[in-house]
Amino acid sequence: MDLKPIGTIHTPHTSQEGMPRSTSQAVGVKGTIEVLERFRGGLKDLDTFSHVILIWHFDRSAGFHLEATPPKQTEPKGVFATRSPHRPNPLGLSIVRLDRIENGILHIDGADMLDGTPLLDIKPYIPASDSITNASTGWLERNEPRTC
Image (tube, rainbow, N blue to C red; front, side, top):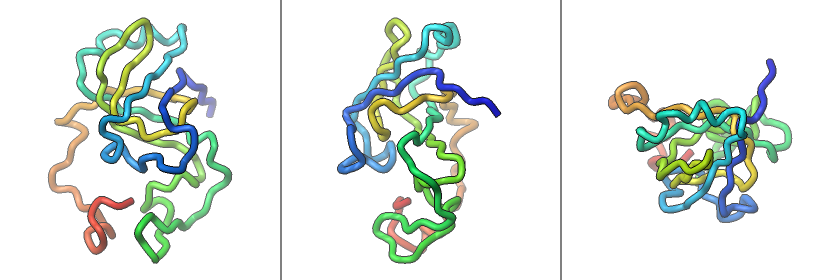
C-alpha cells in the first residue's frame, strides 16, 4: 500500500488542547486546504458541492490502543467503536462545508484537525448516498448523545 498526501490542511489549531473533536463541534472554524499542483486537475467541478468528505492522516498520533475511553465516558470501548486518533491505521474522516476554491486552495468551514495535517483524499458529500436516516448510534444511545 502506497498512500501519499495530495495536499495539506491548514487550520487555526496548533495543539490538541481546545481543538474540536468533530466537525459538528467545529462549525464556524475556518480552514484551507492546499492541494498539490499535480492533483489540482482533480478539483474540476468539486466547487458545485456544498460539502466534501476529507480523509486525512493523524500524523501526530503516536501508536495505537485497541481500547479507548471516549470523552465524558468512564468505560473503555474498542477503538473501532470510537473516534480515537490512536488507531492501527491513523486515518481521520471529516465532512466539512466547502466555501469556495481559489487557485487550488479549498476554503472550508468545520476544521477539526491540526494545522499542517496531511490530506489523503477528497470526496464529494452526496446526501442520498452518505446519509442513513435510520442508523443506530450503538453505545451512544445508552450514554450522552453524540459523544464519541
